[in-house]
Image (cartoon, rainbow, N blue to C red; front, top):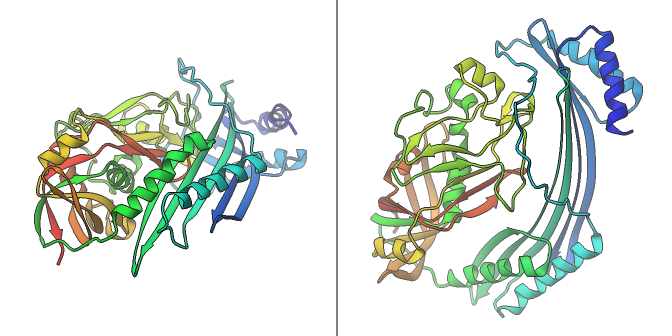
Length: 441
């Protein structure tokens, strides 16, 4: 059944029920993933799903109901189920149906990829074969995969607001295991792309990373100048990203509550949330129908704003930042530390005698987003004569995320992005911290 037909059925039922404020949200997605191990295809998955969320306001409470069954009886029943569910809501959060923004940015929709099993298999095998061609030290457990998907969404509400969006995502992943005698190491890379020309570089990078770690030794306990690679700094940003959510702040789960307008980071730190970043999923509206925008969350160290949806914005006496998710949540788009001006070489010269961190393990187990504290096992390279020196492993860095933002001295000029959960992308350049506690041998 087409969306227009489903909309007519639900709207008719809503009007018959006497509802003044309601909204329906349709989604459809399709995805495919092909994986290779030992230069053979070992996994294949594909799927599609679609559904409709309906919500309505009854006596000041918002009731929700959803279905993946598109029969007239079921679609009609959505309305009565949502109205009944509204009676069970005990939260005092005020949730509204949004009439619409004055203007929505026109985004250049990325043409959704059409999943093609033969093409995906060819790309995955070519990626795996390239990995094995780069070194005779490639070991069992080395995996390559290619994935693609497309999503379509439609939002309609009782104010006559009607919005549609579609986008595609395609990416490759390489996890390389290498072995030299009894010593083993690994490398990992992920990047958007659909052809070997686009994905080939990640094979080179993953293999080079794995080989560079062989022969890693230990480091003495002490305080060192540190450069955190962009890949690992974005992992830290992702782990602690919830502290920038107004919902977390209002629930007492973020130390940034009440800090808007205050200095929370070093002058060189600017953090953005950009729904229009080229090369990524682009969105002109959020899950509540609010127009999105490119936002400077932290500007030269000052916290300009947290991320708000309609409910948290109303509670704070502010406007939504266009970061509403379905069911009253907060979503991120492309959340990243903006590039600075320093080259990789400049950062290494600044941190001479220190450590370049290329790996952090167990972030979610060793980090507390509420307090900002972290203690995580790490690996990387000693910085010798302003260049990467011998590899080091099995040391622990400990600190506090909020203090770390203040301690950043210099920011690199190349932002590295990566997917972290759903369609959210986090990014960061390399950053230099003059001194950090390191627990080694």
